[in-house]
Amino acid sequence: LPSHFTLPSGDKIPSVALGVWRADRDRVGAAVKTALETGYRHIDGAWIYNNEVEVGKAIRESGVPREDIWITSKLWNDFHAPEDVEPVLDESLSRLGINYLDLYLIHWPVAFKKGTNREVDFDRTANPYPTWQKLEEMVAKGKVRNIGVSNFNIRRLQNLTANPLKIKPAINQVEISYWFPQPELLKWSNENGILLEAYSPLGSQEKVKKTLEVPEVKSIAKELGITPAQVIISWHVQRGTIVLPKSVTPSRVEENLRVVPLPQDAFDMLEKAATSHEPERGSDPKWGVDIWN
Ligand code: A2P
Image 1 (cartoon, helix red, strand yellow):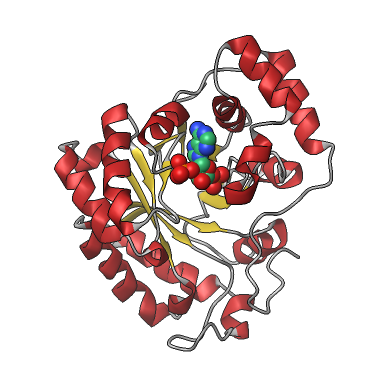
Image 2 (cartoon, rainbow, N blue to C red):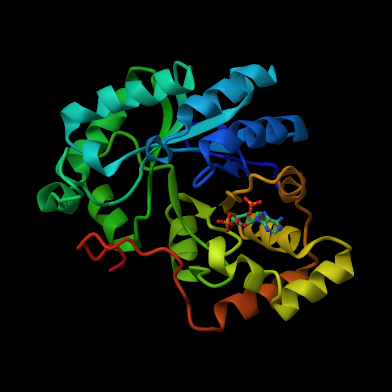
């Protein structure tokens, strides 16, 4: 299985990352260190996860050179106004203790009015182009190497890319799991040169256990002598997506990096099983915007 995917910039992004969403501040440092010791070279974080200081400290203490690690952060919904982008990016950089990000994503296709309690700014939500232009400027300034989006559907990407972009979104980070495999988005993204990153790849909190007990997953795991989680993570990479399993448990962090190619018949069986039940989305923020349609 590919250990990396190549972006339009020429940069190579490692196919398996440690995701640090919901990783508590007192446990995230150990998870990052375990990950780097085990061989991870990709950490997927965000400003809103509120653990960038701990993530940055663990990276420095690991002794792995910064330039060998792919570091992603995300622009939170409060900061879509063009004048707010650079200051909050600088804040992420300073919390992480680094001077550039490998990847910066617009976290959600939803803009809040800054300082309100999640009051939606409908104009900025409808038109993300001014925010995107600021991200392009951050690339030109060398603060960010690659830019992309997160939680965008096809319609929203078409809306953004209808503008005269200097840099196209390289990445779209979205929920993808056995329960929500998103085959249409995957096909469209492949055709349009946008790489997907799968968050909640094991099905997110409540559904992880259920995922690992899917009969097809269990039988493939048995056949290959690997764990059900490894079957799922391998399936994601084999589909051509970057995969972001989150764990703060050292043995799982290690387990999740070990992806293996699934035999074609096993892959096909799993793909068919995943795409032939009713799709069930895990996350659904209630912000008064229909994000998915
Ligand atoms: P923990 O962090 O306590 O180790 P997802 O990435 O789909 O959101 O799933 C994250 C959840 O799955 C976390 O609760 C994590 O638990 C758990 N998890 C991560 N890796 C594994 C694994 N290899 N086996 C079982 N559970 C796992």
